[in-house]
Length: 171
Image (cartoon, rainbow, N blue to C red):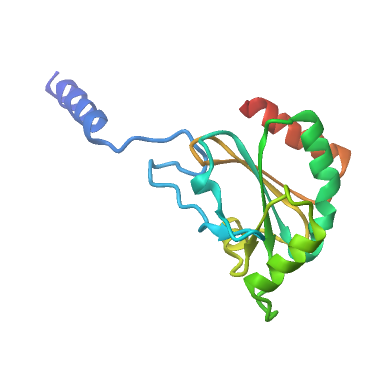
């Protein structure tokens, strides 16, 4: 009887003092979620997950040289999810001597004015999420900024359907 009371007391106290557990896959112990740094876009504005409203958000990370390969992804995403918050990140190879101004100038010439792309010269996104930026990487973040789904590859209908399933489930 004394053993049973002791075990109940220990379990009760452990519930009171044990750190909270988050249900987020990227945050299993309630630790602060570490996000990649804010980055400049081609218009000189800083952007990232930190300054976006707390909503479901899709981030697409790809090498700056492969940005054109995002068109089919974006076309399908805009058609099916017109209100989905989309953040684009161009990974610029560290081996190059390009500056933010160089990349920003090229992006301003090649992209519509309303399409913002963050410029990642340090590969922060690729390092944080172990991404192969030679292909588009689509990262779905919950409102609490935990990563809830990750897809990689050039557009294919089957890939889009898998991503759409994750978005539908998260909404």
